[in-house]
Structures are given as structure tokens and as C-alpha cells.
Image (cartoon, rainbow, N blue to C red):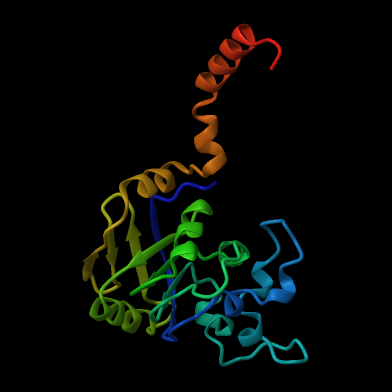
Length: 201
């Protein structure tokens, strides 16, 4: 998993509330178990019309936001079903950070396991960051995980809270498998001990 330390990027404003996982990646695209290739279908039903043509009014189709690495969203982002394909699609598109007032618990935790930083800020601060994001490609927002800050293009700084363990994992690029591998020497010692004590197992 990629490390997350600092990010300076374009933020796409999505002021919708209750953006659920089916909006993020519709169920028709859940046939794969690969984490790659889903970015093209991120927000599929909003990005494309019935003929597959891009909807020019959707934020990620606008020229100034095609390279966005941050989403600034309304309340309760990632609600709905628990599909891990949602953060897979977000990451594959190139989004590394989502800022909102609140997240669904399962989606929130899945973000950390996939190298995405979900940031919770008070409503007035999200509104300020959203207004900054609406400036387009000229407004780059900086996210500093170590300092736990979001800095607007105008220099306004907002501090966010994060669980210390989740922060450690993101800073070091540790997913569940990597965390297990960190204990490989202890696991091998235990297995050798058990094999000696109970060779019939």
C-alpha cells in the first residue's frame, strides 16, 4: 500500500449529502476482485449518460477537476452497502483524500486499508474548504497527515483528528497483510515451537 504523508492537489467540490457506495461504484461493476481498473466507473451513473457519453456538468468531467486528488463532500459520505470496491474505485481514479463532516463507519475504515485518508471536519470548515475547491485548478489544497492539517489555497489551516494507529498505518503504507508480515519472525518462532512440542498437529 502506498504511504500517505503530504498531499498538495486539486480538490473537487461535491456538496451532495448521503453519497452512498452504489453511487460511488454501481453494483454492476462488482464482478472483479482486482483493485485496479475501477476508476473509469467511479460515479458512473453521474459521469456518463445512457449512451456512455460523458456528462459535462459532472464535476470530475470538468477540465479543471479531471486531475483532482481530493474530494470535498457533503455529510455521510460512503453510506450504504459495505462494498470495498468503493475505495478501490476512488483510489484507482487518483483520489487520495476525501473531506466531509461524516463518513459511514465501514467505508471510513476501508479507506485506511486502501491508502486513502478520510478527513472529518466541522461543517463550517468543510464549507470553507468547499468554497476554496470551487475556485478550480488554481486552488491547490494541502493535506499534511503528520501535522493533521488541511491548508486552503488562501493559507487557512484546519486541524483534524485521527486515530493514532490508523495514522501510523497510513504514514507507513501498512495494510492488514503488511501488519501481519511485520510479525513474521514471531509467527515463525511460534510455529517452530508448536512443531517441536506437538509434531502430530
